[in-house]
Length: 336
Image (cartoon, rainbow, N blue to C red; front, side, top):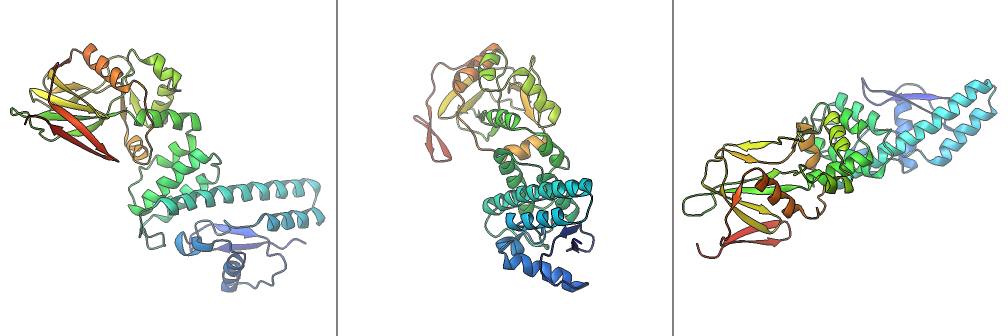
């Protein structure tokens, strides 16, 4: 007969089943203690025991242990159908646990120093169970990185993850993730100028100039269909014709900054600045915050042409220049 042990680590948590091998395990609290000792002795959870607690109690289950369990099944008196089912289920479980462990380690490596990963962190157990269960099916390294960063953010700021994030993460593909990264790299600074030409506030804005640039977008894996897929997924809103506008700015002149290139808008429809064909949803904003940018070829040219086509006029000369030091951008004026 095959001996199978079931352990629940939280009062309302899942029951995890495993083969105790040659260990003599009793019932009651000793079961959980022995199981944890087994994992520690195998160096299974290492820092995960103290950090992510019992997110995935058997994350460090060794391949050797799985092979021994499969061998026990094969030698048993069970029917051929039952053996096949149990072996297949064991291998699937092992793969799922490996995926969960990878994502949890990414979270630990990318979280801010001092982030509380204990059961007292404030993260909902229900949310965590749903997240880790879905994370078990993620094998793509690129997508695992996204899951890990989202998990880190949730522990940093419990309750901050949008409710539909898990569903969206479960459906996003590497191709869509790459396209989304390309889109998120398209940002400009919009800086209103007062009567004296001094910068009066300002903000960074996503600006995706898809109109008349569809060929360049398609070459980068961001076709019309891909943009529609991202909209269906729930991370963006896409308006291919009219585009979107940013309202509220009434200054006579506006300085825009695209990388280290600056231009001054001298004429536009007051209160309405065109900002491209894409806007981010709340989930899109959350994903953008963990997304590294990539270089977008000809982005400056595309932005200027888009704005000109929308009736915006630029000053032929200005006395502003930008200085970039790492991630810091400083704007200077030659003749203030």
